[in-house]
Structure formats: C-alpha cells, structure tokens
Length: 210
Ligand code: ZN
Image: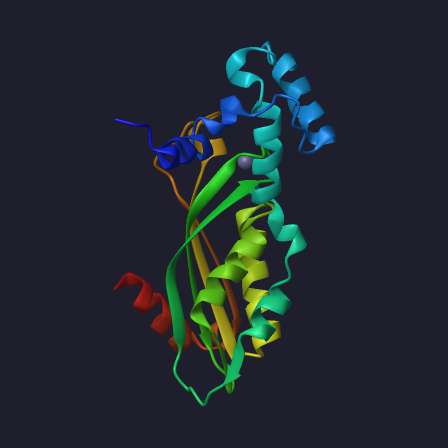
C-alpha cells in the first residue's frame, strides 16, 4: 500500500515532531540557558538525546503557565458584561484550574466555585472560568488567588456580592516534605452580601454541597 502522505504529516506534527526538528531552534535563549544550567546542577547531561530539547520545551511550558501576567481580568469581564435584571445568585461550580505555588514553583490544582449576586449586570459564564485562569496562570499562593478572583469579579462586575471557594491539591506537599498525598486545601473569599449576610453565604455553601 502506498504511504498516505497525510498520515506521515500527522505523525510529524505529533509526538515525533520533537525529535525530527532541527536542534538549532531557539525559543527563548535566556530561559533555555537557565533550564540547561538547572539540568547540569542536578547532575544531568543536557546534551543526551532525551534532554536536548527540554530547555526549549520548559521555556514554552513556563510561558504558558505564567501567561496570566499578560492578561487582564478587567478586559475579559468588561467585554462580556451585559445588562440583565437578574436578582438570583449565579454560581459557576467546579471550574478546573492549574496554578503554581510561588514557594516551590510546583503545581497546585483543583476546582474553583464562584458565585455572585448581580447588580443589574451579568457576565458570560465561560468568562468566569477565564478570570480564574488569568490569576491561576501566575506564581501564586492559593489564598491570594482566591482573593484576586473575588476582587476582580466584585470590582469589574459591580456585583452586590461575590463568593469564591477553591479546593486544591498542592504537589509541593504531596511530592516532597511531609508527603501528605490526600490533603486538600480549601480557601474562600467572601465580598459584599456574601460577607455581610450569613443567609446568602449559607445559600451559596448549600449549592456547593449538592
Ligand atoms: Zn509550595
């Protein structure tokens, strides 16, 4: 059977593309140099086959994982806000997120639950998840991440109140030190009516338990 040129092309764009590409490709020289130095410092040989393109891959991954610095929650929210006379609480539950702890630069990840009480304006639901990403894709501590999401929603949506609960597993705890594999960290930030009115808060927490 004649080789299907499309199959070869797909293979090249996939996993194998890495090893076929020219070694000379440079993505971000300064970052790649640092990763190379790190590999040497841990006793690895950065020139061995499997590691040759690792500095480039790490540089690209780092840029993605910290891309939140370049993004603006204000822009994302304000572009997707629309007037709507909604009086009820809006909740977006189980938003998956991935972040990196600023103490070890190791991932922590989990779910965010965001609720707000609209004040004449609502925002597209997918944008709530994007706001979480804006702050998650930075070096973070979970508590600050939680507060930043709440503050951005509160300020740019002009909501009556905002509640954010985040549950996360921290690989820096799971993989090293105390090695508590099964512990999760829960953080919350309440603003406006969620802070002032226990019933509003209880209603929100009730939804999360369903
Ligand atoms: Zn850590």
